[in-house]
Image (cartoon, rainbow, N blue to C red; front, side):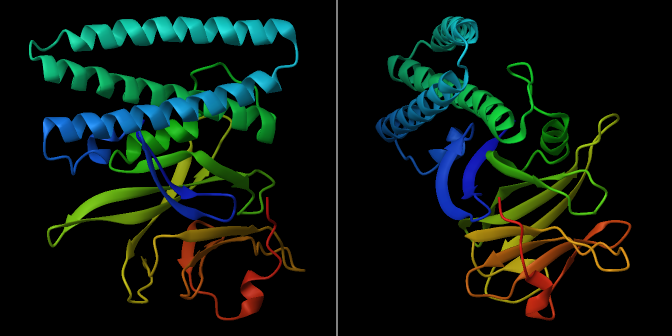
Length: 279
């Protein structure tokens, strides 16, 4: 899975540029071997700090000594695997400078992967009360990654809300698609609403927004967005739940259930976005 920590979801999302598992793009402006090494060193350091933070959070979560010990042993096993894998990748070239690049690239990739996996465990156990096996991403995440390979998903920041009033929460997650336009590297913002069905293959609706100053239905004027989820029904039972997308000083956009599918609309009044249920 490819991940980009670009949108900081707290139901309030601020812009960030820390990439995970995408360090080949992270260092795409490097114009020499030395510049590539320096870039990768910074990425390895950032990935290690992120992994340390996630590991410490998970370690604190396990109060029972046996679970703490299992986590410690599991991490030691992973470290042995990482060292062996990176040693093998280093040997794939005879050029000394490229050996170092291979090593740093391997360390960045595997450390980011590990932080992603443990981060999912921390979030699911603390925020959602879900206990899963280590290394296992939820099926809806796997579906999003498989069906949308161009998207760098921000797995570390996501939330769940019932947006179609069926008493089961949908999973909301964001990401970006990097693209080249007029010789410049730009990105589109992606918002996914996934139905996490108990059986079968999860379904997801993808909303893709380009970033420009025009107020087109599927465009944003800012890459820094805020998401707010509101869960409510009308007196006659009609579902009025919505996910609002705020971007800069531009008008809100709403994602709502129309009875058959999730659709994108633009609110007509302030009442359309009243009383959000914030996490």
